[in-house]
Amino acid sequence: MAGNSDPLTPRAKIAVTAGKAVAAASRAAGRGSGSVIGGRVALKLDPDLLHRLAQHLDVTLVSATNGKTTTTRLIAEALKAAGPVVSNALGANMPAGITSALAGGSEARYGVIEVDEKYLVGVAQATEPKCIALLNLSRDQLDRAAETRMLAENWREGLAGSKAVVVANADDPLVVWAASSSPNVIWVAAGQMWKDDAWSCPSCGGVMQRPGDDWFCGECGFRRPTPSWALSGDHVLDPHGSAWPIHLQLPGRANKANAASSAAVAAVFGVPPQVALERMYQVQAVAGRYDVVQFQGRDLRLLLAKNPAGWLETFSLIDPAPAPVILSVNARGADGTDTSWLWDVDYTRLTGHPICVIGDRKLDLAVRLEVANQQFQVCEDLDQAVQLCPPGRIEVIANYTAFQDLRRRVGN
Image (cartoon, rainbow, N blue to C red; front, side, top):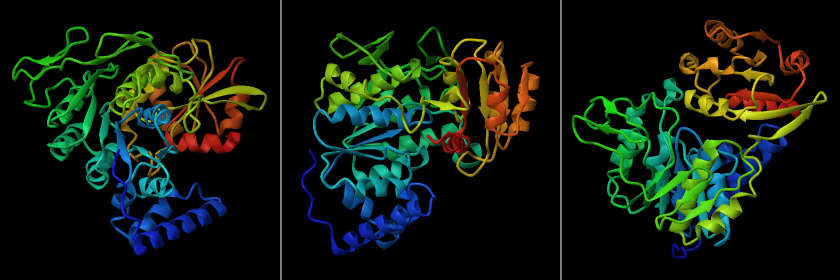
């Protein structure tokens, strides 16, 4: 465990107090949780506040393009078996939001922090984590995050020589390239459904060979490392070869993979796989994701999918056709304003599902569905879409701000 730090400096205490006051004012005004604006104010008053708040914690950072919010929640639940945990459970994953979260963790022993991919290196320098979990890298918000290879290179350079134990997905070549500069890596075979960002070698640019679940570059020899943890069906295999059953309330293969990585992280802190996995069963939903809500007398399951890899995983867990589906896409600042990623999603997987389309960019999505030869209706809003859906539970899939709009509309 990290040693107890000196009490916060007077300046830091003022910064924390001011940040909490601004956050409370933001909530009172109905402008969200206030964590981001509160953190920004606090960091303005004390630029070193994030470092000060993390000093007494054993910190785990979780970063990825997909699954980091859920994995953060699973790890936090597992580590509660060993002591109090502070976490940015609502997903505010840039420095301001992280600072706000840690400001409420003075009594915690562990900090489990989701970090936006672009900010991982800086947050790692500020918080000196004991463990870093790297799950995947794929195309996402191209107007903001740029190319995946650049992110992988940034991680690789920034984490070189890190003292943290890095728990990394052995099935994602970009993650392996990024993590390989670290001296202490635990490899997890967590799988990789979306492969379209990893067909060229991140080391030399050669063509990647992918026989079965393996991968390697035939030109430079860069290859998949041997994992010590693995997802195998409904079980996690630990380094000793023992198989531990996964019992989750969260659906889908992707969440089993998240649980495998989470169990590996928990073991770094001495929490046995059986205990960690049992605690993960407590997680029913994550920031509204996977919640089933009642709206206009219908059951709606709310699903977040914000990039091609996320949509692919989501399609794999929805109810089979002819279950009705509502799709909603926005392109606001938090989503990324470039919607060209829609053309990377295989919407033919929705064949047989009645589809309704809503959101700010519903016409962009309609054009994409037309090209994919899907049957759909463009609707003005959620109310109209629900009225037009045939009987059955409705699967509602939305990207980030569209998801938040839907949660507000259904009162979730």
